[in-house]
Length: 304
Image (cartoon, rainbow, N blue to C red; front, side):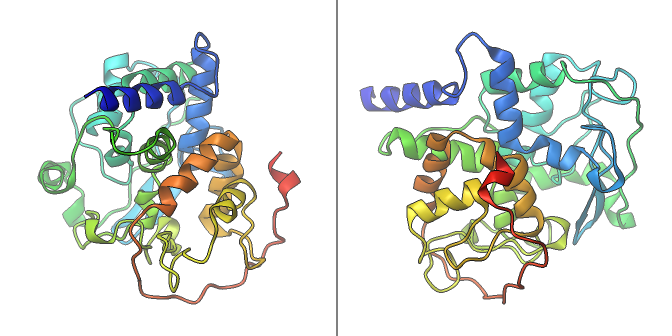
């Protein structure tokens, strides 16, 4: 019991480590970046306003459009109470009581602590409000009713805050919290079944149908199809600069995640993620040939 309390205390302290304890706004901004909120909720391709939504997310189940999360009271989340915000991320339920599609990664965000959820909300409510209505999703007829999402949740959704493992180090627990909850790595890197639920037996083993229909690679320590030939230092470097040990660079969605999110984490947090990821069970997956990057590789200074 004493060990469990010690690990939990370390996790809580680590959760606020990058910011001053009394500076909730800075903590909220840090968590906002770590979660990559701007990546999905800003339609950069069409020069959309920050956080006003409208970015298309193509999936095997249809095209989802991210919502407006600015504090606009009419088209954004300006009228959401703290309880509304926490319920949305913890339970996947809107202020009106409707169920969100799991394209919104509440299956991961449910693990966030109450303090972290409140900090993110405080930061968001200080951003510029933008009046922009949400776009309707483009889905096949049999997925347009949200009533079926209640059944989906019963099958695949386990709500509740992250539970630290008392037999693991503080760094491992911090890394697990970052990777599985805040940065929600499994949302892209874990394959899904035909109902959209995670294939838990293949957690982090890669997903041929990742975000925007881009393949998300195997990030388990499998030496043949994963990152088993990488050192922990290689992974830390990759999370900061996108540089791979073979000289290639991150591309597609992952380049955006590194650019806008992971490169802004503290070195200790990137190290913690590496500790956790390298501890995952090695899992061989179907190998797919990686295409060379067409864009000029981003260099370390590009992220600073």
